Image 1 (cartoon, rainbow, N blue to C red):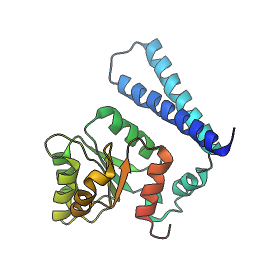
Image 2: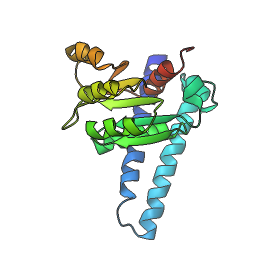
Image 3: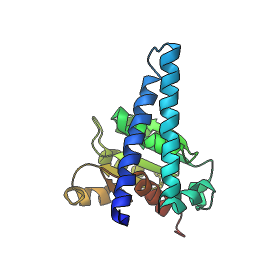
Image 4: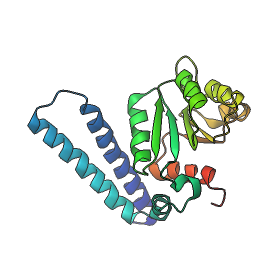
Length: 199
């Protein structure tokens, strides 16, 4: 297996395991008997251990190790706070699961209106903004957040062609764009790039 095949295999495995963790976390809110709860906890724990093992073998592990050891400037600070604005519960859980492994504080917004209100009350190291949200979409929310004077970097997340909205992203004050699907390492590297100018 060459390096590109290895990277793809590791990416596919991590995505699948993250899916297991996300679905397992959702099941915590349901009524389970003791045996079911034990099976669920074992399933989540096994997936987390498998991800950790894959990460240790990953070529990108150096970036993640630097983040966890606090060598990545602001993003390595345990007090680093991230706002995740995403209306889809599964996608939001996927993002927060990745970010919590970095020991960062996470606030969640289910739509653009909540994102704007949270930014009025809190200071964030970075804002992850889904573009397609009901009511107030990500581009509109980013524009309002900038109008309120928030300077935190904003990463727009979209499944659409970036070229279709390039001008809108720039005008809204978005710093970076991630097109779905993306993997965990891409997300962490993008955050690192925006929060540590030395990188």
